[in-house]
Length: 118
Image 1 (tube, rainbow, N blue to C red):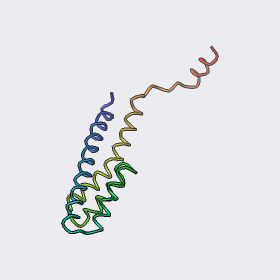
Image 2 (tube, rainbow, N blue to C red):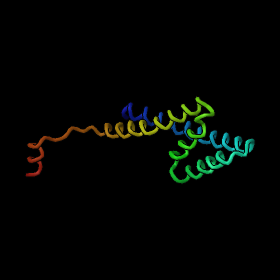
Image 3 (cartoon, rainbow, N blue to C red):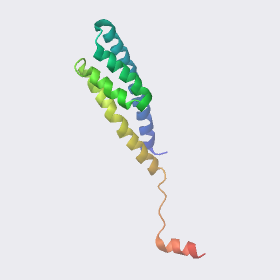
């Protein structure tokens, strides 16, 4: 197999696990914040995060988690932005890697016409 393909698969797996851990941690942090402050905005973000997991996978939930962490934790905000950007880039690398697995040479027109006439 192509090394780019294998590297993309490993990194997609790592980024996927990291995004799942990030979303679970954001849900826990949102619930703790809501139970201590009774802030309804945090409850709304918590509900949007749970609904986003079921509606759009992790895209909407990642955005909601980044919004939650925007003024609270710079490290978690930057980690969320990194995970949000890294996912699509790695998917593109996976697609490119899968196309390079089948790099059979193309036939030229004379050879194709010769085979068609047989």
